[in-house]
Structure formats: structure tokens, C-alpha cells
Image 1 (cartoon, rainbow, N blue to C red):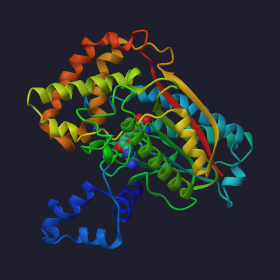
Image 2 (image 1 turned 120 degrees about the horizontal axis):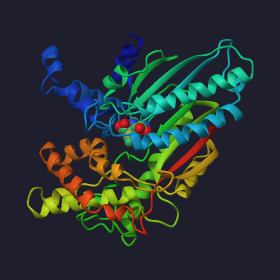
Image 3 (image 1 turned 90 degrees about the vertical axis):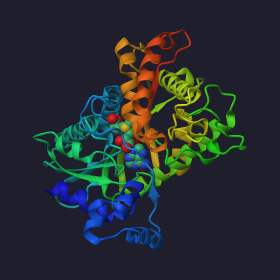
Image 4 (image 1 turned 90 degrees about the horizontal axis):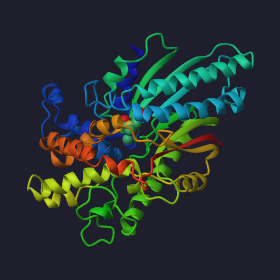
Length: 411
Ligand SMILES: C[S@@+](CC[C@H](N)C(=O)[O-])C[C@H]1O[C@@H](n2cnc3c(N)ncnc32)[C@H](O)[C@@H]1O
């Protein structure tokens, strides 16, 4: 009851509503039949008058089917385990419970920003609560209550998330739809936070990369170039990432209590390498080749490819450190770079799962631009290509995907 109430009220009170909510508000069948609204759009009027930002985030594939994110996120799950360990250390060794919890009863608020529909979010939340329990026990403190806020974009499959909440969990749960580039929770309300593989998503692809005539124009490609030569395009992506992380940190600075801790996990690029040398970079490159092949065959237009750029960025650790330091509201307590898998070996199972993994994450953003008709064809081509090019992932110059984990503390 509590979860659903929170979901509904957040939907209507959140200041951060996306395109889907907007079109539902204006043209959705339910509202048409309820209010007889067609062209007269109260929602548009409200948005214009109150300047509600309409963000365009794209969710992972929902449900629990074969190509759902829930079934295709075990790779991310490995990163979650590593982040958990570091966060656990931070909570157990350094968290000042008395500083962050004022008042007589102990109650902690935890948030996962960009939680998707599970199961990784549940593992992260469990690890945080287990660590808090350990900490309380070590200090001889009473039992606490926990409230967990699951945040993601409004088109995330919150129904699957809520229906799969672990039985016997020790926490109250609430879904919080809205972009994490904006404030989504009340001031000074969060004690522990977490976000994995979510802030790699940009609020939008940088504008200049789709502009014919701009030095950053990314002609014929769907993500940044395969070589370091097209500097302007990569710089445009990097600048957008910097702006977005700054907004993310500003929003979290508002929401966190002083002394509160947060783990951030990114897919990144090791120093001295370029994205396309990494395992995931090569998968993206092969996906780009599938788009070019389909354009050559006339299945999609060149213009559609030129104007499409994935809103994703894979940073270097130094870029992250620079933006966190510049923001100045969180200190970096710990940072780690790790190869995933940790032995660096790309297995056959990884290669077999590549097309499904990418599909579960990218289907929505691709569908919005190209339409749903191309999806099966595109990912079946990708599946074939990745298997044909398996050697690309194990050659001497292949660099395993790197995870960047940072533990931050609110100043
Ligand atoms: C790759 S998934 C990671 C999910 C989960 N944290 C994990 O580690 O498995 C990225 C998630 O970030 C969410 N996301 C991307 N941009 C977002 C934004 N601006 N606000 C909230 N969520 C966002 C996506 O909808 C998606 O669920």
C-alpha cells in the first residue's frame, strides 16, 4: 500500500516529468475518456507556466523476459558486488551514525539512483543495510528502521521492480520516478546512496555531434568515433558528461545529510586507452557497423543514422575526480579501477550474451529514433557479427571493460 501510494503521489508531484508522462497527460486514453481532453492540453499549459523540465531519459527493457534488463544484467552485477565491498568498509569503519542521525529513534533513508527493475538494486540495498546493522551492533546501538527510495526515469518498469521486492525485507520501499539530474528527494533526507552504471547515461547526446557543419559532427556513426582523431566529437561528449555529473552532484548535495555516504559505479576507460579498445567499446563499434550495413541496404536512411547519437559516455577516472572536486560538495573517500571480469578474460558466454545485453539497455533509445521495426533485424545482425568477430575481444590490444568505483561523503 505504502509503496503504491508513494509511486502515485510521486508521479503527480515530481517536478521532473518526461516525454512519456507528458504525452500520457495530454493524449493518453485514460485522460481523454476522463476529461474529454484532446488538443486542449492542461499538462502543456502547466509545464509552460511552471517551467517543469521535460527530460528525455530512456529506460532499460522492462519485465523479466529473455531480452529484459533483469535477465541480462549479471555483468553489471559483478560491479555491484565490488562497490558493495567498498561501501561496506566505508560504513563500518567510518560512518558517524550519531552525526548523520539526529533525533531519538534511529531511522535511515537509502536511495538508489538509476535502479532499473532489478535484481542488482536489491543486492546493493541489502549490502548497505547489512553494513549499517553491523555498524550499529559494533557501537551497541539499538535497532534501526530503514526506508529505501528506488529512483529511475518515469518510463522504468517500476511494476516489475515492486513485484519483485525481496520477501522478508527489512525496509519500507518507495518508487521515485524522475531524472537524477534533478532533485528527486527532500532536502537533507538521505543518509546512504548508491548509483551503478546509471550516470553513464547523459541527459542528452551533445547537440553539436548531430549538426552538419559542426567540427563535432559525427557523420555515419551512432556513438563516438573509433579513433582518437575526431577530438571535437569526443570532447563534446566529455563536456556533456561533465555538465550532467555536475547536475547529478548538485541534486545529491541537496538531498544528502552532512556525513552521508554514496557509492558511484561507472563503466569507464582505463588511463591511456581509448573507448573503442575496450570490450564494451568494441561491442558498440560492431553495433555501429550493423547500422551502417542497414543504411547501405536501404533499410534505414543515412540521415537517420547521422542524426542519431547514443546518449552514453564512458569516462576516465581523472575526469570524474576533476568534476567531483570542482563541485566541492562531496569528498572522495575511496576510489578503485577494476577490470571486469577481474581476470580480464572475455568468455564465450559473454560473447553469446552480447546482443541481448545491449538490446536490453538500448532498445528504447533506438526505437524512439528509428521505430520498433528495425529492432529484431538490428540485434540479430549484431549477434551474428559479435560471434564472427569474437577474436576482437581477446587479441593482444583488447582491453577489458573497466569499472570505476568511487565512495563519496557529503561534506
Ligand atoms: C544500466 S542500468 C543500471 C541499473 C542498475 N543500477 C544496475 O547496476 O544494474 C542504468 C539505469 O539508469 C537509469 N537512468 C538513466 N538516466 C537516468 C536519469 N537521468 N534519471 C534516473 N535514472 C536514469 C536507466 O533508466 C537505467 O535503469
